Image (tube, rainbow, N blue to C red):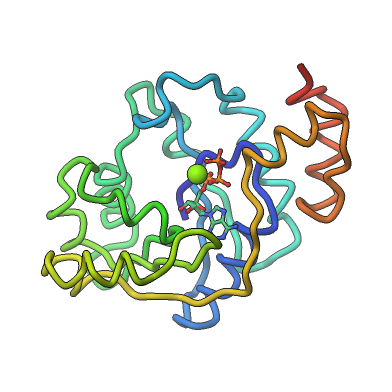
Length: 195
Ligand code: ATP
Ligand code: MG
């Protein structure tokens, strides 16, 4: 599961856990992005903070792990490079699934080498409030690669986003239960997201 994870929250975790169970995955690897190509103009928190918050969030789950692959690269990280890397690490026999929200898949045709990407791994598109599957289903009808590679995953609706959490912190509002306690404590301790 790739993401900026700025910060990681319950929406990510519920999505990953549901994907793991529904698709019988051995484990889920969270891959915080280095400098996300689509977020180049937005100030994001340092990769090290985002990585550590992701580790704190998944530490107790034996099926969850975190990869430093994208944050340790000095080039911008494209999903195609990451997928190629993990194919090499796990070999041809491993079946790779890239877990994303339905919102992300709607933009997949703007991703680098999207056609090759879709042929190299399955994509799990998780439902997300505000991004109906209908749009994605329509897109799949016209793009055969999307049709054959994207799997839909209905998850309990979680209208949580990292943007929402960052705003709440800046406004001095509580973020309890939106993200795991250790992540909340890490945010407070390091004074992240305060203006
Ligand atoms: P931001 O608001 O900064 O864009 P975000 O909450 O969308 O943050 P990302 O790190 O951009 O988090 O998301 C990583 C992946 O998780 C994306 O594929 C996104 O669609 C998915 N995702 C994030 N939040 C949810 C949610 N509440 N339900 C389902 N999928 C989600
Ligand atoms: Mg997002």
